[in-house]
Structures are given as C-alpha cells and as structure tokens.
Length: 197
Length: 283
Image (tube, rainbow over all chains, first blue to last red):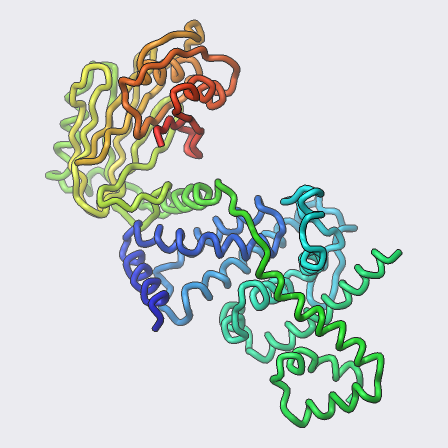
C-alpha cells in the first residue's frame, strides 16, 4: 500500500470513529481534486461547488460503510459522478428547462448549448484555441461519456479505476470510451467546418 | 471487417493494445479504405489533444471550503439524536445547569444543552486539540455548538464586567450547546475562553435594533456593540485585541460593507459567515 493510501486509510479509520479532524484532513486533501473534476464536467463554478459539497455530505453519511474495497479517491469519483448525474436529472425535471437546449442520443442527453461562464471573452481569446475547442467539445458530450473522458484524460485514471468508480466491467468502459472519442472527433470536425464558414 | 467494426478498434489501436491479428486486419482495411484511414487520423489527433484537458488551470473558488463545511455541519445536525434530559448523567449535567441558574436576573441568559455526539466536521477546518465551536444563530440568540474530541473547559464571561457566567467542562464525545441569549434592549459582549486558546468575543444583539447612533469612537469592542445595535446582527471577533481604538460611521443597509469601510483604516476586515455571524478578524 502506498504512503498516500496508508494516510487515507488512517484518516478514514479515525473519521469512522468520530474524529472530526481526520475527516477534515480528508476533505482538505481531496477538495481541490474533486472540484477540478466537477468543474470539468459542468464548466460552471457554482454548480461544481454544489456537486463537491453534496458529494462530501454523501461521503460523510456513508463513511461508516466504506470498507476500503477501492481507494478512497475512486469512491469519491463515483460519488461525485452520481451527484453530477443527479443534479442534471433534477434540472431536467424542472419545467423551466428549455427542450431546445438538449438532444437525446443513445448514450444520454447531449447539450446543444456550449457554455463557459467562468471566463471572460478576453481571457478565452488568450487561451490556446485547440485546448479551448477540446473543452467545448467535451462539454457537449452526453453526461456519462463526459465523465469517462474527464476521468481518463484529465484525471488520468486507469481503465480499472474508472471501472471501479462507475461499477462497470473494464470492457464496457473501454468500448464506451472509444465511442465517446468517436463522438468527440465528430464534434471537433463539425466545429472546424463551422469556423471555416 | 466493415468500417463500423473497424472504428470500434480505434482506441486500442492508438494505444497499441490491439492484438496482432486485429491490428493487421485493421491496417489492411486502412489500405483499402482511404476514408476510414482519414477518419482514424482525425481520431488520433483528437485522442492526443484530449490529454491537453489535464493542463487546464482551474481556479478554486474561495468559498468552496466554507460551502463544504456548512453542508457537512447541516448533515451532522440532522444525524444527531434528539436529546432527552433524563438520559443525561446527572453528575455531568449538574454543573452546567447550576451555572445557568446562577446568572438568572442579569438579563443575560445561558442555557446549556448536551447531546450524544456523533462524527462530524467543524466548519473552518479546525484541527486543534481544543475544538472551537460552530455557531447557530436563531433570531438574536447565538448557540455555541461544541463537539469535542478531547476533554477541556470553556469559560464564558460577560464582556462588560468580566464576570464568569459559566464554566463548562466538555467531555470527549459529548456534544454541548450553550446558548447565549440577551434579554436586554441593547447588544452585549461575551468572552469565550477555551483552555489556552486565544479568547473569542461574541456580541449578541439586544431585543431591539437602534439606528440612532451611527457614529462614535472607542475600542473595537465598542464598535462591535454599535454594529450589533445598528444592524441587529451577532458578531464574532477572533485574533483581535479588544483595546484597539477605532472611529466609526455606520452607513447603508449592508452591515458587512459598512463594517469593512470602518475597519479598513486599522487593517482589520469583516465578513459575513454562512451561519449569519458577522466576523471581524485580525488575520
């Protein structure tokens, strides 16, 4: 077991016995990583913060059930992903949601609107255009595909860890990731054509 | 192998994990299908570009930690079991309730409630051996919520006279919630001392707000009382010398903004906590 995993295990055991400082230490260690993941899924700082806060509440409530079958971080990603999907589901059920802003696909709902409220147009211009295009393309993927793409390419999780986090067989993770990359390529090609016009 | 099937192998081929037979079949397909080969090249480019996602610099909002702490504190409150007085060991409860009785008639009230402690997180991420309290504001009353993981003593004093209002022995795992309520018309200052920790000062507003005195000069304690009277808001002061001198003019409807305008010249700042307390901090 790595030093990092040992430290987590120690904090988890202490937190399970009611040590608030140990639970705080877990939060401090993982809150940035959790936020970065949530932001990459949502491209919205307010929504990402809500997802992270909700995820840590779920972790707090379920910590006594955590037996260490996976790394704490893998468990955290699973909860974060569920929070993200739940929040989006709730938003979709609101009557004010515009039907024109979404598109149903085999893998879920794809957003037509591309949003990045976290940056000003000036800042956006300064960013590397290719990176920016890629982030926009990821943001319109169906939610489940988006989560997988971010886990693998941004969070650098292995196929095994993603499978553990999403409770899927590795083969399914690989085939869905391949499909997500194919979708991305199509989005990027269309995006390029749009800019050419 | 048709084109659709071939596309299923793009990722494995790019990563070099495709078995040799399929690899050969795919490469032969590329030779005979220029469109598919072009398709793969676009795919490979996108795959490589995807790794740029990890280079994005994502700014962490300053409110993130507070939001997490607040939500967890709410969850902790919901987890707590209802307290029944008759379940409390008498020997532990006696000094607390005697203390509460002793200060009746001063206009300042302090009622102490104990609960069975469950795990939780203290907002602000205190990791000290001595657990600083979190706060709950209800109307003009302020409840200090302790969830100690080590035994220690909390002494609550009147800020104006220095009189000890209560000395509470906190036991490990025993949540205790002394409530500071002020029946006076004007705000009152309390001093909270926990073992060797620096004193915290809490101002509890009175039963009425008073906007008749927007200006004044005196100590930072006087200023806090003036703010509590003017805006009818409870205040918390940490890492602040109570004797610090200040002149003030309270203006506008935003207590935080108004406090900051006056605190800025003496290099102090105020912010509104998520629990509703206006915090003045000496950093």
